Image (cartoon, rainbow, N blue to C red):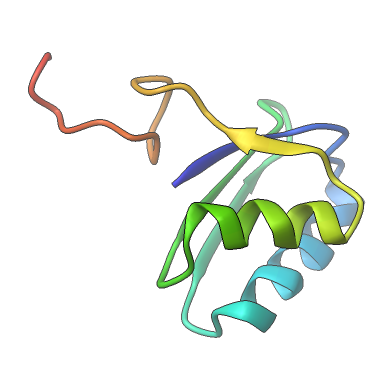
Length: 78
């Protein structure tokens, strides 16, 4: 899953990773600061991920399909 997350800085990557892993300890979390995106691979739902990110003060939304690695894309149109 790929999320657009506002106001992400290098200082907040540990907080984001920790918050997501508190919900899903097996989650793989990648924070892309320049693109203001967070990629999450794990067992939690999109709703849980967004709620968790919002719970630590970040406005988050699901990234548009076909907008980057981790976005919702079946790969059939390329």
